[in-house]
Length: 130
Image (cartoon, rainbow, N blue to C red):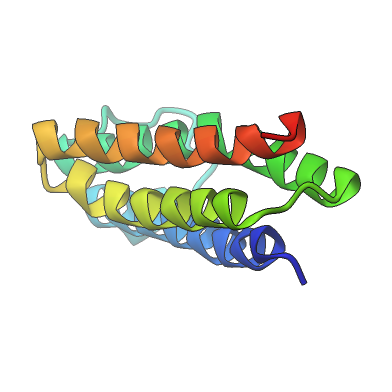
């Protein structure tokens, strides 16, 4: 199995972590009963639930690009050591991004995001045959 496929499987676990963390922080803010309602009138997120929501949104903005690159690499058989490293770098950076965002590590968070983008860039090299 190509390393990018392995990372894709782990990224699914990471996506669940992002979802669960966001949900749990929001539940801690609003309480069990309101969280289990239709939530027609959600309260404004507090500091941590807002950060968790934005971290999840950011993850979901880049996740389709990662998935598309994995699919293209698998279909074109262009997986290389470089593209595999890119996938692992992306996953590691996205894993660090969640706590960095929630705990307010602003500059570090931005650097981590740039590292994840570099991982995607390494993956993008593969389909072009470099």
